[in-house]
Amino acid sequence: MGVIETAGREESAQERADAPEFRLDNERLAFRFTATLTDRGGARIERLPTPRRLDDWLAANDLVLADAVATVEDLALAHRLREAIHRAGSAIASELPPGAPDTTLINSVAGDSGVYPQLTPGGMRWRTRSDRPVRAALGIIAIDAVSVLGGDERRRVKACENPACTGLFVDTSRARSRRWCSMNFCGNRAKKARFRGRSDTREGP
Ligand SMILES: [Zn+2]
Image (tube, rainbow, N blue to C red; front, top):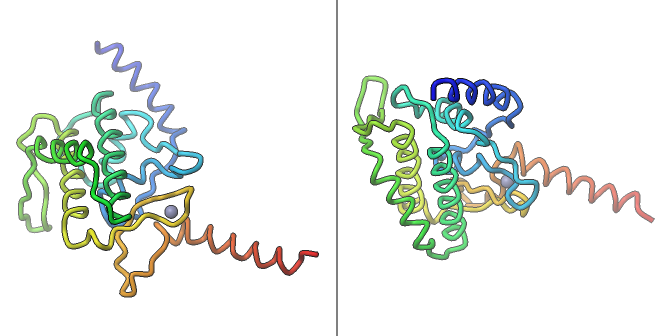
């Protein structure tokens, strides 16, 4: 078991070097998590290809509750949770109710996590009673999904208008006029496409 695990870890260290970088620019944890699969309507870039990359993502988001390494099962649950949040969020962005299988999964990951908030001098910190810290961390993401998809912000949940993207975000703009998951990604792509369109018209026959 030890040998197999070591071999697996060495291999994933190589995969880690080759893995796509994370997109961490979304303010909402649950939607930052759904952004680990990007270009859903296009090339589909999987940014959590291995359990090791799930560990890396949790560390990058300050969600390491105790020493633990993600297993293949943890990664499978992470992918299922992520897609449930994305489907539920997309439904809500279209003013439709989320599907029952998705809400059931989100609720069960949230409910089984054994996490609870604590006030510390540095602010709020999550703790867990669970002996499975990776599952507990997924629980924190599920709790954030319940909060954003079930609370006051749900009316501001939107899907990026880039059809190749469909990334979720909360539109906190006053006029509720935000269209893109991120100006740095889809906003700029759209701007460039518009610019190209304009110069095509100008240069066209
Ligand atoms: Zn986008």
